[in-house]
Image (tube, rainbow, N blue to C red; front, side):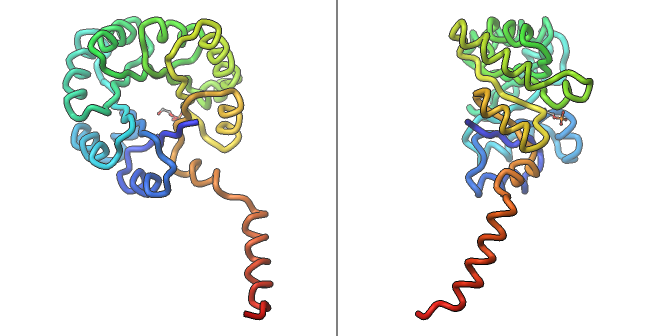
Length: 214
Ligand code: G3P
C-alpha cells in the first residue's frame, strides 16, 4: 500500500519523507491556505524533494478554467498530479488531461458510482473521502470497499486513494480492503508506528541488558 502525506507543511513533509513513510503528497486549498504560502511556490518547493506524485488542486469550477489552471500547474514538474473535483466539468477536464498524458486525482468522491464515472473519464486516482462520510452518519469505508469491487470487476486501472483518513483504524480498514493508496496527515502516519508493548518491551530489554556480563 502506498502512503501519501496530506499536508502543505514543508517541514513535516520533509520529516516524513526522511523516515521513508511517504510515496507522494496530497494538498488541498484548505491546507495551502493554512500554510500561508503562495500556491505555486509551495508545489514547486515540494517537488524539489519529493519524486512521487504531488497533487495540486485547481480552484476553477468550470471546464475551461480547470484546463487553464491544470495546464499551468503541470509545467511545475513532471510529478505534479492535477486534482479535480468530482463534478461534470471536473470529469470533462479529467478526460482532457488523460488525452494529454497528464496524471489526475479526482477528489471529493462520496459514492461508488461517482468513482466509477471518474474511472471511465480516465482518472489516474480517485479520492473517496472516508472521514467526511463518517461525519454524516454513513460508513465511509463501505464506499471504499464497493469501489474496490467495482474496479476489480471491470479491471479499471484508476487507483483508489483513500482520503480523509483520520486515525489508524481507518488506515487498517483501507489496507484490508485493498485501497491502492492512503493519504494521511503526519500525526496519523506517526501513530501507525507506535505500540505501548513495543515501548514496554524495550524498557525491559534495556533494564535487563544493563546486568549482562560483557
Ligand atoms: O485532502 C483531502 C482529505 O484528506 C481531507 O481530510 O480530514 O479534512 O476530511 P479531512
